[in-house]
Amino acid sequence: MAQKILDRFKLDGKTALVTGGAQGIGEAYCYALGEAGAKIAVVDINLALAEETAHNLGKQGIEAIAVKTDVTNPEDVAKMVKTVVDKWGKLTIGVNNAGMGVWRSSLVQDFSEWRKILSLNLDAVFLCAQSEARVMEKAGYGKIINTASMSAHISNTPQDQAAYNSSKAGVLHLTRSLAAEWAPKNIRVNSISPGYTKTALVDKLLETPEGKTMLPKWLEKVPMGRMASPEDLQGAIVYLAAEASDYATGTDIIIDGGYCCW
Ligand SMILES: NC(=O)c1ccc[n+]([C@@H]2O[C@H](COP(=O)([O-])OP(=O)(O)OC[C@H]3O[C@@H](n4cnc5c(N)ncnc54)[C@H](O)[C@@H]3O)[C@@H](O)[C@H]2O)c1
Image (tube, rainbow, N blue to C red; front, side):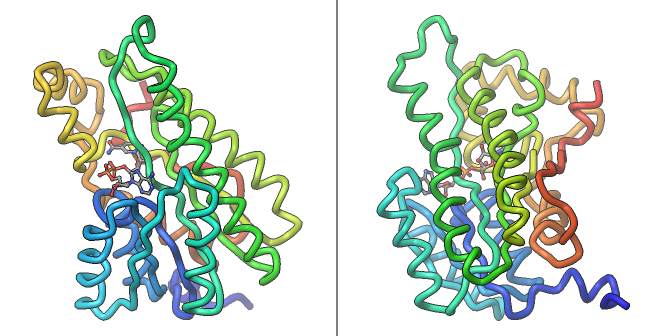
């Protein structure tokens, strides 16, 4: 007989890293995984913010460290995983969440901007997953959770963001491909696809003149009539990190207030 269901959501004794963990969705993931019992490495390019988040997690009784990492840099990524393993002896959960968005017409987008978006949103997810899986393979168990987006499933309107949408569609299929490849090694790879979520990333875009006209148009298309808060995503991250989801791999959980239903 398996353990009771709520016990299979507990993460006691597990260790997790969350990229882009200093703020926004990543920060909400750090709290969710930490409250469920895991030790947390807050990974971010912004060390000061990561340290503040780790400190605040500590005040809630969650053991946490800050790890400065540029996830687009392969050496940094290898160091990030080593730091966690050196500190706690293992890495059970890797959440590859750091990402960026830009609105730009594809007719005028510089190739360098396209590359920058793809490098952070897709290449870095591969680099992190690869480094994490090398450690998980040795342990014989692991959970990798990538942040995709509803933009992996639909093309947002009215803003132009082909690079972002393409990068997130790539994350979705990378997730499925790695899931199939690593299932025999007992490593699960899944993703979460948030809809519009109130974070610094979106606030920055909404402050622009174009952005100010955007919000009502977005909300018309969200059946639930509001943006998500990062807390709306916390249940899914705990599920995918926990033993409760051990038979789930290559799957994506869309949390978008119903946007993709239409
Ligand atoms: N907010 C939304 O509406 C929304 C919707 C769908 C998907 N997403 C995705 O969720 C993820 C998090 O988004 P958010 O809204 O919380 O963003 P955010 O901008 O609030 O936070 C992103 C974090 O990533 C960090 N970061 C940026 N570049 C980095 C790098 N090279 N190395 C390490 N860390 C880096 C930033 O410092 C920041 O702390 C992204 O992948 C984003 O595409 C967001």
